[in-house]
Length: 113
Image (cartoon, rainbow, N blue to C red; front, top):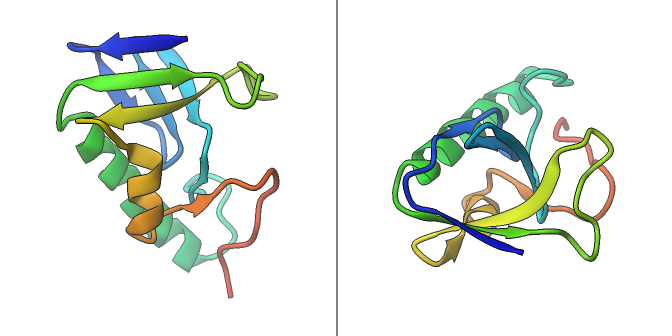
């Protein structure tokens, strides 16, 4: 399902979770560093950068939300799984390209050396 959010209230919880019009959305195609359950200072630092970048992207233009991830609609926490585009560009792919996230492969990998 496609949802276009032209004047949506958007808030970044962290680099891969956002609230859009009151709905929690987990960005389906990425894994960003944690800022709440981080394992080292480097992960926290990168996680805060990812959150700030996600917040800036959410504010940069109209959002298009593509709901679902390979047939799944929600994650184990009940968050909607989706990809989000701003100006036609996938925000998850942007964070990956900028080194602020990794492609999600189904399990977490450590951010600490």
